Image (tube, rainbow, N blue to C red; front, top):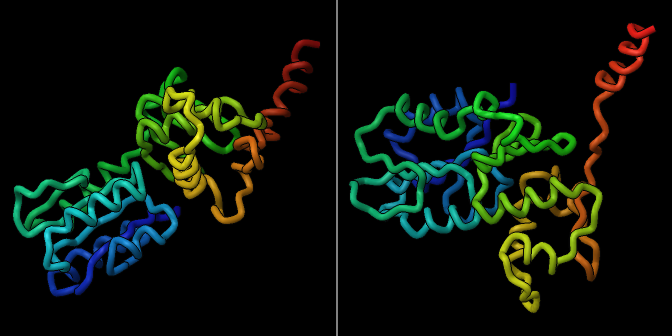
Length: 238
């Protein structure tokens, strides 16, 4: 089973870092970077740990950048003392154990299948979305979405194979007819591609229709096993 991808942002690993890094690697595919900028250059992870203890700064600005650049990705912020305003989902101050850190990560990445109901689940090919929790699941990997990104993804999943023009998307998601500046839409489309595309720079699923908008191209035909059910049922009726 593939481990969840975790980005660990820290500048100068020390003895304290080593105490929790090894346990983290048993549960996650850990990628270490030394700055928030390097973290944003990575493919979309399942979670981020920002070790401000190693940065000799509160890391508040970096936490905000990470939440803006990777919306919906769970972020844990390790700080030297409490009271800091942080955009992170969870803030830890020393002392804390690796078990507590891992438990918090697993809680943020908890499986969503048990909470799914037919009313809250939207399927489109190999992609499914929990509408109530605003969580996207692709090949077993979960990605939490911001409200606007969730609205955009839902629009595409409900209209596979259709070209959705920018004016319609702006009205649907942002409730505006203003289309002179669609940079916000384009940024959200890039975020969606980071999640759905194997290579966001060469989109296979979310295609740009030049001068018009975007089209989600996903195979929505049922799997072969499901297709074989109908002949079996027909034989029973004979």
